[in-house]
Image 1 (tube, one colour):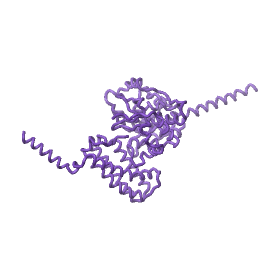
Image 2 (cartoon, chains in turn blue, brown):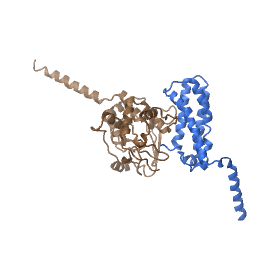
Image 3 (tube, chains in turn cyan, orange):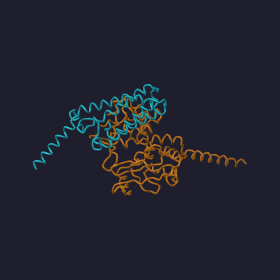
Image 4 (spheres, helix red, strand yellow):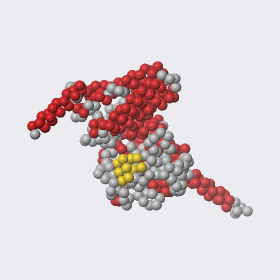
Length: 151
Length: 286
C-alpha cells in the first residue's frame, strides 16, 4: 500500500520534472507569445493575400521576403498551446486540447503550405505563387474554423 | 373586307401578348448565374475537394440531428434535377417540398430561400438547367433516430416555417430593401449567424445576433459591426481578411470566394447598409 503511494508520488514528481521546460512558463505568457507569433504571421501574410487577390500590386521581392519570414513564423505558435494554457483567456477553443491530433494536423498543414510558398516564391511563376498564397490562406482559415472562437 | 381586318390585328395582338408572357416566364440564365452566386448554391452542392464538379453534390453538413449531404442539382435526368419542371423547382425553393411531395429537411435553407421572388427563381432555374450534367449519384443523409422520418417535418414546418416571397418595405429605401433581400433571401446569412432553438429553428428575435462556440459565427448587427468602417467590412467581404492580415475561418472564406466577392459593388454596399440598419443585439452568452 505504502509502496504504491510512494511509487505514484515518484511518478508524479518525475512527470512534473520532465515537463518543466515549458511548465515553468506562466500560461498567460505562453498565450501572449503564441499570439505574438500569430500577429506577425498576419503582418507578413496580409500583403501577400492582397497581392493574390489583385488588391495590391504584385511585388516578387516582397513576396519572397515575407514567404521566408512565414516559413519560420508558422512553426512558432504551436508549443504555446501547452495544456497548462487550457484555462487561460484566449480565443482558442477547447477543441485545441480535446481534439489535439486534429489540431496538430491543421498546424502541420500550415507549416507545409508556408514552406511550399517559400519554395515557389523563389521561382518566377507569379500565377503559381498566387495560387500557393491562396493555399496558405485556406490552411489558416481551416484551422480557425475548428479551433478558434469566431468573433 | 373592312370587317375582316380587325381579326388579323387582334391575332397579332394576342400573339404579341403570348410572346411577351412567354419571354417573361422564361428565365434568364445569365441573371440566374449571378443569383446562384448570391445564393452560394455551389457551396453545399459541391464536394469539398480539389477538382470536384460544381453542383454535382456531395458536401457534408454536420448538425446535431445527423449528417446531411448536398444533392446533385445538375440537369442530369437520373442523378440530378433534369426531369424537374420549373414549377417543381419553384415549389422546392418556396415551400421546401420535393417534386414527389415529401418534405425537405431545413438543412436545405428554404426558411431563407422561400423569400426569393418569382422572377429570380425562374432565372435560377434557367441557369441550373444550362450547366453541364454530372452523373454523380446523390448520397443519402445519415441522420440520428428519429430524424430519419421525413413526415416529422410536417410538424416542424407547421411550427417554424412561414413561406412567402420577400416583399419590399415601402417605408424603407430601395437600397435597404435590396440589402435586406440579399441577406435574408438569397444570401441566407441568418442560417449560420442566427442562433437556433433545440429543434434547429432560427430564433427570429435573435436574427443575425451570432452564435457562440465551436460552430459559432459572429454577431452581424451594429453591436459588433459599429467597430468597423464600411471600407473595412467591404474589404473583408472581398478578401476574407482583416486589415491586420487575420484570415477568417474557412467556412466564411468559402462564402467570400463563392458569394460576397462575386457581388457587384452596388449590391455589396446595399448589403452593408442593411446590416447597419439592423437593431443592435447583445452578444449571445457563451
